[in-house]
Amino acid sequence: MKKTLSVQKNEEIEVVFEDLTHDGAGVAKVDGYPLFVKNGLPGEKARIKVIKANKNYGIGRLLELYERSPYRVDIPKEDAPKYGGCQLAHIRYDGQLMYKENQVRQALARIGKIEGARIHPMIGMDNPWHYRNKAQVPVGEKNGKLVAGFFKPRTHEILDADESVIQLPAVNEAVQVVKEICRELGIPAYDEEHHSGVLRHIMVRYGRKTGELMVVLITRTVELPHRKKLVDLVVSRLPQVKSIVHNINPKRTNVILGEKTKVLWGNEVIYDKIGDIKFAISAPSFYQVNPVQTKVLYEKALEYAELTGSETVIDAYCGIGTISLFLAQKARKVFGVEIVPEAIEDAKRNAALNGITNVEFEAGTAETVIPKWYEAGNKADVLVVDPPRKGCDEALLKTILEMKPQKVVYVSCNPATLARDLRFLETGGYRTVEVQPVDMFPHTTHVEVVTKLLFGM
Image: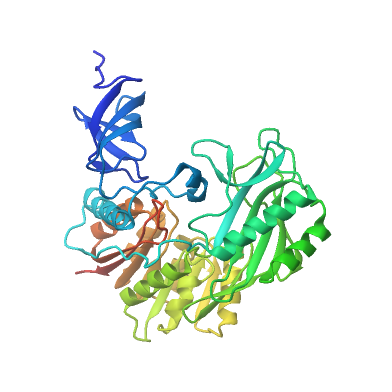
């Protein structure tokens, strides 16, 4: 017998929101049936319209608020384009921190079944605005005019924006200057539907400590119209620019960067510093977009590693060597492994740039390279992992359990996969001791967490 749903599609009902999902939607329940509603906040009473009713859950649209949360912030409609990508901007910042910390606590309890760990309060920012050092702005055309800004939620329509509230002012300025130059020169915008036109994205990277700017123009075509004039205008209007790069992406894809990159003017890289470590940043390099909180995150990882100068450390998923080089300041030796060969080349270049010689980097999968190091006598006292959102490969987790380093420091950008992996490691003899959430991306749903595990406690 088919079960009758508690609500029906297109029905309008009154609800009270109880919680938030991992992507910031309000959660209400009708006879136990969950409804997810964008912009709903816990404690609010509202009228909603059910726009989708699946077997296990429904989706609603907020129509009217009867009781407002004290954490709600109103954003004027005319300012909406400035808040592109800010899923939590309607929540007061202290409320955002509370929500994200609760998300970590719930994931560790429900998914990881973690008990006894000390979970610290979320570390937020003193000023949670204008923090991003990188912009990747989609380009399109509207009413015959080149526009660049943000995709309208759940669509491919580009909303033109003069600034972003989470980009650094220098980044905002550079994006607007390049957009105006491209308009002046009549460079055709990319048409996603017909896979025609030229300019797909404008990317800007900025060294917060050095003040150096990189402009990256991503096109569908090999040729960039008015290339020389464009370069001359960018250089004259942006005195901080040190690098202008052309990236070619001819594919029908949502991936921003293509495989071919060439320098049009200046250097291949710009430089920035986190703490005392200097980094070279190329167009495709992975580099944390919030340098203020990155320093907080890495210092916490260093604190949890508790290095005295005699330890061997392995950094799995080492990227361009950011955490590895921080650890090398206090360790005897650091080994870093990363599957992307270009990132390993960047890591080696960054080590040389800082005169750090007690590090060794190798390209490959962690579960292949780490056992090889182990067989060569390089047993890790501390193992650091900083995986992508999908978490650690199970093969790596099994390798950790075989090697049994005394300490594991796990840096995560996804509380759910962190909790899953902690459960795996705890089953193998580790204990989660301390957990520190860090708000790397204010006004978005993303959460970073640093966790310390000890073996045999």
